[in-house]
Structure formats: C-alpha cells, structure tokens
Image (cartoon, rainbow over all chains, first blue to last red; front, top):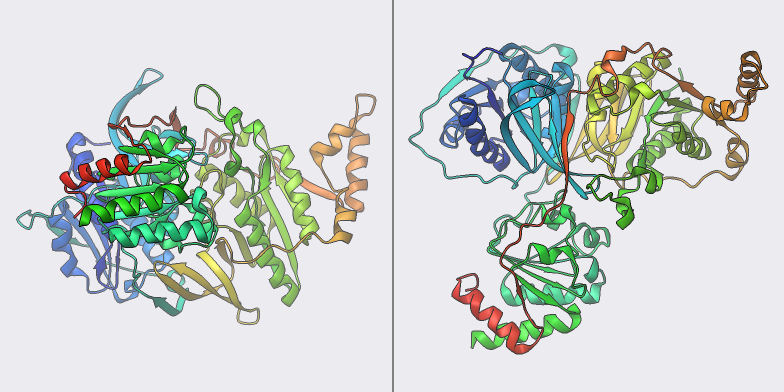
Length: 340
Length: 299
C-alpha cells in the first residue's frame, strides 16, 4: 500500500428516504479514532437520489470526504446496484478499512463487496482498533482488530485480516458512540458517476411498507428489562408495573422475546438493540455476553436475580439477590415512598 | 420445464445449549462436547423449497460443506423430502471463513450445473454472520433476496419469483429474475416433520465416508467401487465431493483461502465496576434509591 494514500478509512453512510441512519454517524466518530492512528482521512460513501443535502451532516460528524453517488435508480435500496457501485469504488481507490452498519442493508451488501474484492469481513463487531502486529516475524501495519463475541457469546474473539489489503467490518447500531457534530468542520464532496447495467437493476421493488417504530429504547433514560427468570406473563407484569412507576421503557433479553412476552424491537443485546441509558434494571437476566454487549455501557445498572452467581452481577453497580416476585413489589413501594 | 432448487444447509453445534464443560480452561470451545444440529434457519429454507416443489414439481438438492458427520443432517433433509443430498467434505476445507466457504459452495453449485433457485438460512447459529448467502450469490454472479419472510409467487413461464422480505421497521416485496439466491429468516416456514416412509428408506442412505468405514482391509478398491455403485443404484448414496471433484483451487479453500484469521480468543472478562450488594429489605432498597436520586439518575 502506498504511504501517500490518505484516504484509507471509509464508512458506508446508510440513508433511507433521505434520512441518515444513526449507525453511519456513529461509525464516522469511530473512524476518526482509527484514521488518526493511521494518519489517514475519513471518507463517507453515500448512495441515494437527491441526497446531496446529507453530505454536510456527514462532514459535521467526521467525514473529510464524501463520495456521493446520486441517481434515480438508487432512490430505494437494492442489493445489486448498491453493492456493485461500492465494489467498483473500493477497487478503484483501495481503502484499507471499510465499515458498514450491521443493519438489514449493511449485512446485505457488505458480504458482496467483500466477496468481490476478496477482503476480510467480520460481522457484528463490538470494538475496533488499529494496531501494528508482528506475525511470524512479518510486520503488518495498520491492522484492523475486529473484536466480537463469538460462539453463542461465550467467548470474545479478535479477528484480523493480515494478508489482504482491504479490511471490512459490520457494527450494530448503538454499539459505538455518535459524538457531537461540529458544523464548522470542512470536508469535500466528491461526486461519483453512476452507470448501471440493466442486469444490475433487474430486481424490482413491488411494494414497500415501513412504519416508524413507536419504541425508542435508545433514547430512554431508564430501561427495565426482564429475562429468562421472568418468562411468564404474571412475572413479566411485575416488570411492566415497575417500568410504569419509574416512567421507564420495557425491554428484555432474547428469552422473553422468544417467549412472546415482548416484541423483538424491545430486545436488548448483540442481536437486538444496544442501549446506554442512565439506569438499566436487569431482572431475571443471567447476563450472557450477548445481552451484556447491549447494555453494559449503561451509566448505572441494577441487577435482580435469584442466582447470586449470575454473571449479570459482574457488570452491575447494585446487586439484589432474590425472587423478583418478592423484590419488585418492595422496590416499587420503596420508590413510591421516596416520592412523597 | 421443471424447477431445480438447491438448498444450502449446515450442521452446527447447538450453541444455545452450552454447559460448563464445553468451555476449555483457556477459553476456547470444545466443539466435540456440543450436540450437532440442523441449523434452524436452513431447515426453514429447505421447507420453503419443498413447498415450491409441492406446487411446481421439480427437484430439491440439499448441499452442505462440512465434516463427514454432516451426513446425519443430510439424511434429515432426505427424510423431509429432498431428492438429492451432497456432502462437500475435505480436510483442506478446514478453518474456512465465510469467503472460503462461499467459494467452495459456489464451485459445488457450478458442479451441480442447472439451477433456478438457491435457498439458505439467513445465518448459522454458530457464527451469526449472515455472510455466506450473499457471498455465494456474488460468486455465482446472481442477485439475492436476503431476509426472506415468504415466497409469494413463482412464475416459471416468466422465470420470476416474488418474495416478501424484512427491512427495517417493515417489509418489502421484491420481484427477481431466476436464478436468484434467497436467504430465509426465522419463522418463515415451520419445517415439516419427517415423512415416515422416507425415513424407513433413507435411514440407509450413506455417504462415501460411511461406506468406506464398512470396508475393511481384506477388500480391495474395486470392491469399494462396486459397493458405491450398488448404493447409488438403490438411490441411497449421499454424494460426497472433495476439492478435486468440484474443481476448486486449493489456495482459495480452507484456512489458506480465508482472509480473516482468529488472532486471539478470550474468556469473557467482566469489567469490575464498583459493586454494591443491596439487601432485599425496605431499608436496603431505600438506601439504593436515595443514592440514585443523589446521582440524578432518577427524577
């Protein structure tokens, strides 16, 4: 790789109906840290139709350059045109690092781009770092350490792609911090011509339905979450009662989603939403890494579990050992008494 | 014309059932201690393919890359209704990442030849990457429909398929030309139970490895070939292909063909935050709430 290439860290700036996905902005913030270590700039790649207005937001959030691919065929996301255009740009410019949100869209196209360019790609990373590593006496500069829980969340694996030029990763929404935008930042918008073959746009969108979710876990200051230990409607009602008293959002681990007690959009964890509220109350949640990955950055964590050995206590600030049927009514009563 | 469907299936360790002795002291996983199961979303993918076969006729081929014991899962595919089962297995495929896996699968698919549809689960529960489907589609240079929820219509005369797929906060319906690869999400199609008649027949289905294991040193290679022919003639052969059979480049397979490498694996270390044990008494809970109020967490 050439030492003069200053354009080595890229972020796919996902947008839908002219609205940027938070995850792209979060990744730009992370990309700045990675790029600093590599002495590189940060570039955002934006595809869509009539989306030029979004470029200033991307620059404010950390992009030095925005590659803008604007065409009416790109108005709605489709795998082939999006993946092929990004592939072409990656092949031409040869960045060292390309980051995608682990969204429906990112997980759809990143594998195609990585496959065509024979790049390393790691899904659902929870942390990224740049390091120079010596492997079998060969020094590898600017390696992207792709860190993710693996094997059902029982271990943390660090993945590297030492033998290829381009290193890619997907990262779930909310995992990285967004950072404050700086409207005074300067950046370049680089329009990229869009040429598509009929074969690339042969898949047609017949219908599309999207309803903004009424749930805003990411924005909730207090979250009350239930898990395997609360997987009956009766027990879960106590969790809802507590949430109501505290003015909190209700959430849960995969166990209660699978039990049908809450919608999947309320699932916290590696395969759900990542949250960082002021207070997270984990009730009957043992604390497998998949769940912890989605909540351990909370400012304060209260864990309530009848198993004193539950791993959730390892990330909690306050631990209460006991059955939720006994603890929750007492907690509700104690909170109410302090309000008066 | 008849419909040819390939279903990509994988036998996976049941990661939802990890007990203490599965984890080695160094933090690595002892796969041998985990029960091997049919990846749930792949089973739903097979069900979707079989439903299309019920409607339109044609053939369904189950294809896996994996160790010899993946034949167990392929027999289950035959019990459910697959017409053909193929095990791509070779020591040189070991430690393949998603890129090397999709390369091998795409070479096997090219070796199968004709196909109209390829189904696969969205992701496997041992990796949760959701990368092999799209990467296989890319290698075959065909479009994909990821996160498929249901197939709405297959028009064989126009050679198009309509499918409903999940997107953020909703769904969309896509129409794609054949051939196309679809990845299937959980709950798309409840897999049918094993067909009892098929189970009686195909429990005797064998892979090349299993046939080899029945042959001892007193027999020569010709005898082995004859045995294979016999099993094949009875339609009980789980076809078993190695690197040469699918004409794959060794350098693109297994660890050598995998750009991603595991640098290190660690046990999960809990960040030791300041921790207070709170007694489940009114006094204990009151003290905790007072502290949280002082920290401006409440109110």
